[in-house]
Length: 635
Image 1 (cartoon, rainbow, N blue to C red):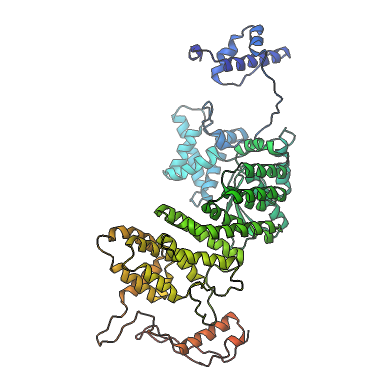
Image 2: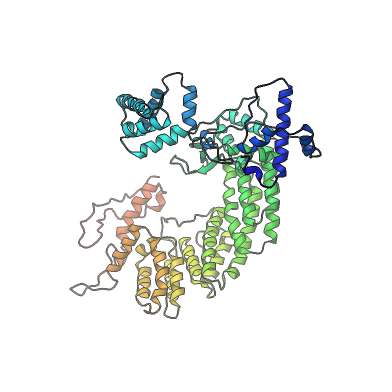
């Protein structure tokens, strides 16, 4: 090291070493004679040189002073094994801890722990394996001239006997035992930053012990303790202390009162806690201050919207007011419809937490409704004359906005199966809406303009048409008419393919159940010019590859029996499973049975007069058992 230090002087190192020598002199003046210094090898020559005291005092004179506090950070074996800093990592901390703690027969105890680990992982290991492995380790130590078996001998014996020559279980032993994930402990009276003390108090009160192993935590927000745990984890995430990560719940429930978390405590979190201490002395106060600061310094409107959702999850009402004010100011000044459409879904999702967590979300609703109106007004001009990439990005915003407005107005996002035949609504006539001039009606009018405007890319026009059809704003006749116009010979093949991609983005079941739409798509596809087909093919592959395997197979079966084809006797042959015309008498029995299962009012089914019906899928299929339709239905 003395040879390596012959280069240019480094003032920072000189001052550090002068302070080290000062501390050594102070310990010597206190009467100690046998002194051990733990330091990097680089500093050894400077500490052994012992220059005059005046020289060290000159180096340290005039340095600025700062009041600091020291604390201990619990470390893990895995962190000890990492070669960071000076590169002095401990390769086997788990092994050395075992040697330090084993009262006797350390080799046998170590091999027994190996066998216990392998049996827990469904490896066949018996006590005989442990005995033979211990004998082999002793023999290897004698052959290698060592007084006792070390880590190398135990691993070699374990590979040969316990692992039967395989490196896979040996790698498990090296990870779980040789290194391990043991977490150190800090005495309760050790100095700590105020935020750390408050977090420790909350962890103890909520029975959330920090552990280095990953574990799942499923919370039921209807329980007070689980709700408090959720608030703590969300507040820590606002402070960039990522102890827990949101994960799906293990339970079958999909309600908003369920939350799943993946917990894993890392030593670096102690540093993150110290850094977050500038925001407050308690977790709640620090999270409040951090949320307000992030709302002021956020670069995009969507960041502020997501922050409002985080404040609701963390139950920070004071910060939520400041965030909503910042959100309203930014939304008023932001003229980019894409930004508004990106911010709306998270804002609408936040409204659910008013019911689950008891939070007043009335201000959020007013803000979301105003944002939705601005999206409805600005979306048609923003969608005009977009390129392919811009249309794809806007299609994502279109679908997300549609779902958000459906949640905001309480309307279903998917069409419900009516108990009575729905009257044709016609283009632009809202169906099933009590307030056609409200937000739902305004959004439907926006979709109408998108679907009929020629300057809008085909992808967006097709997507708008599909949303109108799903919401019963358009009937099947109008959808078929628009599909025929989009796939006419006057339309560009690429635009037509984009229209199909947008129209079928919600799934391919529509083609299975509406043979007329399927026929239109089939006729257009077979009539695409050969020169334009290579440009259309990638769009079509992307569209149909998104369908499930069963849907693609069913579409292929429908296409195989072309509509209008004739059989050997000249009769019109229909697609399998579908009649040329509907049979109301046979359908009435099925409707009455469905009404009975759904528990609908008797008035909806008393008019049914059919008593039995025999249902067949094809003329050659085996008849299904008769279905009896009751003449009177009890709810």
